Length: 319
Image (cartoon, rainbow, N blue to C red; front, side):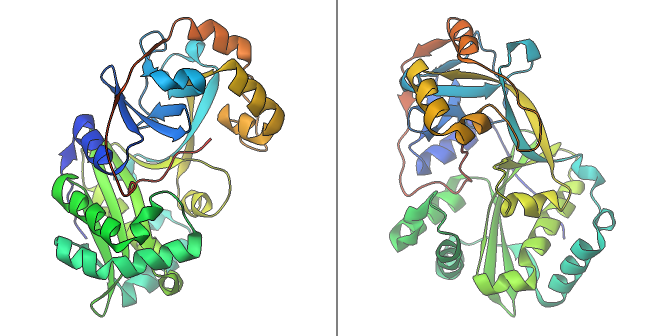
């Protein structure tokens, strides 16, 4: 299966995201996403900023922000990012026996093809999305349960995203959907949903395999980004079993001193994860002193807020 992506700039990607998500904010030429009240990360978490030059949205002074850095000496935390590296090396033969078997079983009953028409998407994809939501109660972008919001998302998706929308079909019936977008040299595998009963058909395996196989023939794609590692099994475990790696990206973290105190005392596990600790591994030992010394070099200026509605198609970053 040979699919092609249209390359997007970060400005184009941000413009699309802001149609759907009012939490995407521009500040001094950089794009941030509000992932918690008053807490921000870059729109693409793997983008590296210089702490001395990073200008976070103004409201971050009440909560905080975090971004990747290239210089380890500037880091006081880590971001745990899920990536498929060296995508051109992908081959189904590199997978274990069970993963290969699941893909081959799925390919006997299902086909993957591009969805090119918004009308088909509105009519056929709404049912699989509702099934996905009812199964997972996934709150990010949950306003799409409303048919009007789902239709608005579809219009934006097909109108301005340059995204590749793939459908999983059985006997002409659409039961699964994925969205991937090529931003600069990174492929974002940002959305997948399907009917509950289709999980037994291994449609998720076939969809991911189809995307990775197409990316392996695209020299422009240097990495495939899946989102932040959350350490809760489920989707993370699915990708790790299929060759995904957790990239521990050095990061700079600023926390408002009061927010730091509250997080440290009331939700210690979330506080540890914010610093990049993965259970069973060592912890990066940041401290509030790090915040104070680094924050003196970091400006907080007013941001230009974007407008949007109906939620985003992207996976949410969380602490």
